[in-house]
Length: 183
Image (cartoon, rainbow, N blue to C red; front, side, top):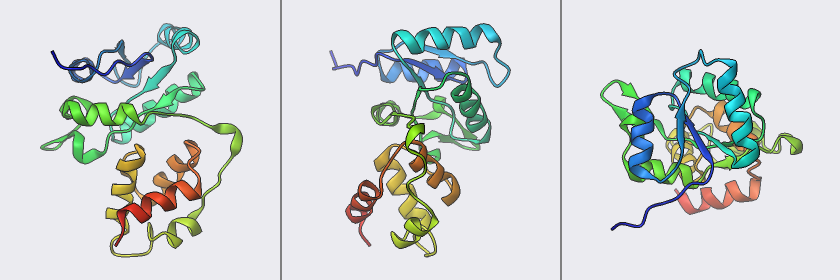
């Protein structure tokens, strides 16, 4: 029998196929929003779970998933966030958690971060530029690799910076990851 990764927090995904994919990867309680139009009762369930076990928001790595993530985060502050890189959730033209390999799902959940609102932004465009994460021909690939290592997914520079600050990742940690990437 394989050793199963156990997640204590309630994991929130978008759809039923996402539930199946996550349950193939980890032992956890998983619920779905059913899309953007979830009701107040769903929010009450999440708020109760946040108090008991905690909540991990794990939405698709697309614009709809980002909108749902923002709405859930506003509804239930203090949730952890897990991010799947788009390339790991792609099947043809479809991007979603349901397309990801179990290893990719486990990696994303392993790096779920709690939101750290109180500290405010610590990184800016200057820091990304200094580390070669913007302004070079290799910046996109370097951000993609750094995002995977840090567990924050791959995005454009503005969203990458937002996620770094949202997760409370400091310059020193980011610089260490960039040094690990090299070139």
